[in-house]
Length: 116
Length: 106
Image 1: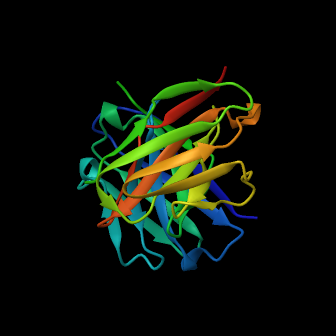
Image 2: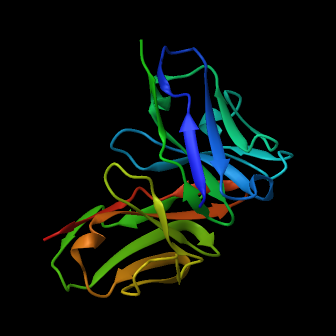
């Protein structure tokens, strides 16, 4: 059974950093591209970043370029999202998702609240 | 970036009623995916590659479209179909979602 379990969320002040993790199991992690998708409270889904199966390629939405870094450790079957210079508008639930032409499996999500 | 516009934003349907949700793209796309999300839950893939049903999706659901216009149809609304549906596409290493259509039971 595919499982994606996010961790690392919480309350953080504007301008500070936070790192999210996503532990994957139930599939061969290094065979799949992975992604982060966020959802602000009561709002719709928004793609954040994607990383290729081997980590060689990364893609970001414009609003997070230069602030967020997606990475992965295939030996640990873990996906990461380093979020720097956080803004109030980054407040959202962040989902880890396995990508294979579509976001086929999603984690349960982790809440990030950016507030002073 | 391709913008996806869903309509309606919210709708209510009676049991047994036919439902159609549309998704229009600001430029032509090759396919559309759809996700279902219920309150407090993660999104689930629902229809992929425009018209293929994801695993476990009832066959009262169907998808169609091409170019800039796509749709999700429920042939006969059931209680369990109440949810928010999102369309999604990929182009030029950028992924966009529609704003969602909230489907309620009348």
